[in-house]
Amino acid sequence: MFKKFLPWQLRKYFEMSKRIRQHELQSTLWYMPGIYILGAFIFVAITLYLDLVLELSQYTPNMIRTTAQPTRLLISALIGGILTLSAFTLNSLLVVLTTFSGQFSPRMLINFVADRTTQHFIGIFHGSFVYVLIIFLFITSKEDEYFVAIPGMTVLLAFVTVVTFIFFINHATSWMQVHNIATNMKEGSISIVRKTLRNDLEQFRCEEPGDLMEKERETQSLILAPESGYIQLVDFKSMIDEAKKDQVIVKLHNKVGDYVLKDNRFFSYWGPGAERVNPEKYSSFIELGYKETEIQDLKMGMTKLAEIGVKSLGNNDPQTATTVIHQMADLLLEVEKDITFTPYLADHEGQVRVAMDTEDFNFYLYRGFGYLRHYAGDNYPIITEIIIALSMVSQSISNDKLDAVWDFAKNSMDHIPKEFIYHLDRDYLLKKLSDLASFTHHEEDYYKIERRLLEIEERYT
Image: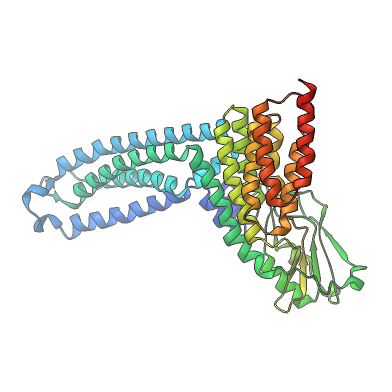
């Protein structure tokens, strides 16, 4: 009942599932500082207990204890100092966020804000300020009172905030470096593959569909989306368990990360127990929200990484684009190694219970390099870097994916118009394409591309 009186910024957290709520809280800037502020209250209680109840000054030398007046003067000065450092830190934070939004991608903002180091730094400043502010209220003007813990802790916190400010500036400038940004984005996407997708999907995947209950499928029931929004999360384990109890197969018509409108196709089900199925129960396993999340959506992470490269192409920064291409190749290798490209999820008995509209290797290949290839246009050095990255990938992936890699590279070469191309660009591009053709066993296709480019040269000579 009390949720109605909360602002929507707080009320929305009560309406989320536990997993989404945890992800959202970790991505906010107030969550970690709030913990530090609560810790500041605890430190205030401990400090006051040591000085006012235990009277620690009785057990310490005279040189390290002070009276009320110097203590009050010290704390009042440090309040302003810590507040000034906090203001400089927040100003630096705004500069970093503005730079990220303009130079790289607006979707990068949440990555810097959600970074644990950033949140700890902001929390230290706010916790320290709250500590000295509250302590100031308990300092009296009595000359017969002596303090040891209060001035000592206050000076220590002032020292910590100064050091933290230096480390924060170093952290911000280091985080903004292109290689660190690209690496952090890649590691975040790899974490999704290894933790989320492996735990949520891989343990249930099966390559052979087995019994799909095709006879019952003729009378399948279609459920429409209850509202518009992005599919943020699917509780596959609970859905499989319930489908096993109900003796049905559930077909998901959308993928995690897709946007659906109200009354669009949501999912359908069929099987011997279809008559006793409660559709609302299965709808509750699919989380809809107003924005995309990366919890189960690997393609969002790949898109964010590609956007950095696209932005760098617009800013005439080829080195950044090259760095992104290399990191994308490493991410694509992780995808190929850890994801089984099958749409079927089975229970422990091997019976398929959930069928998905799954992505194949070609989908992730396009998501990774498609945008970069498109915006590179006639930037042949960047096209060459993509070919080099694909050559490295082809050396490490399974043989059944080699045709897909070559088809993507061949299609990338087909866009080259029949007009002039610099000799060095052409020769270097052909050399790297020849290496890729050798790795993927498509030498014949390479010779056709080589002849076409040589014919272009003859036309201009």
